[in-house]
Image (cartoon, rainbow, N blue to C red; front, side):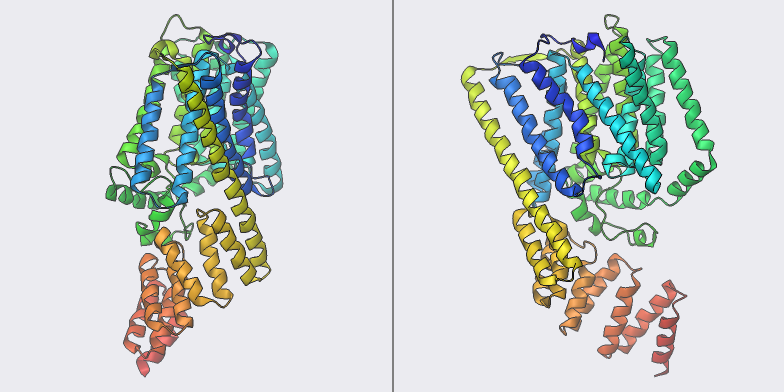
Length: 596
């Protein structure tokens, strides 16, 4: 998009290996957000397969670029050492909290992002390929916007290919400042038009997404861009564009329908209750956390009972809805600090470069746009976890890598020569690792997802035994499919195998203590096989977790009456009436028991 930046590296851009590597890397900006798609018929299957295939692909690219190619030189920025520190903390947290495959998959994902960051920053530093990356980015953004528009017209809900309106909003928050800055750079007219269309798609997409968290991020990003650009740029186009956007944003906020919708979302938001519990989790495991990717497993043990009084409460909470809180709870203070240090170091070098008189205005504009986009996305992530999803995380780490690569003069890269023998050993090792990742991350998860979908179809047909068999096969292929284990127990109970179902529920409790309605389901099974004492114990555990579950309390009353525990039944009924005064059924039963 910008000719100077397209060739700002230390090498040349003749068609060959370097161009192929650059095209492969830049294509990630277009393919990943569109591939992790909610419009495919089988989105979960597609996500798993594509995500881990990309990990293996990037490993092979790095291997080919740095090891197999004749130069045998690795050009590193100092920011890469902060990235490696972040990876080290993640791996240590995983090793000290090892539990099952779910954590391992999350480690693979994090390593992929770090490898992507290193690949992009080093390639920009050596060769420069900003033009290709931004063109792919524009293409993905425009296609995503048309899909979101179609969704909005059909169902009044726009999330494009991201599966969630907040993830789509995060992608737009990151993109808008970059393309606004690109419009003001020196480039061909048609490229300026593409950048302008991309910026317009970002703003319109944000309006359609109706994500209030994204608006907070956008205000932050635009403010940072205005502040940074005012220090070195007097461009009328940029100032005019920013002024128009600010006016449009305020005008949008004044539209009654949008204002009322945002106010309703904020008033009904359940995040504060989740944050409170997640902070307790972090305080119990302050240094290394509970382990990467294990928030979902451990959260029920820390969840406040008041959570269930909220209209948006669910039985299973997968994320903390704050990237920083979730990172702290999973990897402790060390993980959070390592991430913050990496981001601050990269942004600090980027801002330092803005005040370098030898740097062109185009490069400064693009850097300011990227820094502003990263800032806006991080502000958005104080109330969301978009970096947990591939479609949002790839653009973030890609953009962070480009900032690191464009600030080479500030951070003084380090050059390492690679011995030929070591080069081939590394090439073989990385290739084997990539092949293993393909099998572990693609073949097995694909097999697991096929059986999982088959089990759902059989379950919907009421074929409980065959559904249970399919769930077992899914778990055999991929042990991290916790939902398959949970639903397997449910199918076994309906298939007339209560004892087998109990064993599976116990295993669920080992992996994710107090998840969902495990205790209630176990209590019902215990009651059906005549073990009232065990049923009472499980119902009491469930009652402590969720005192507002009326079904649990009614079941307790029924068992107490069956066991002739009149006093316990009366106490339970009194609690029900106190919590639910409108429950006439409980009042009638209490009157009947007190008269006896």
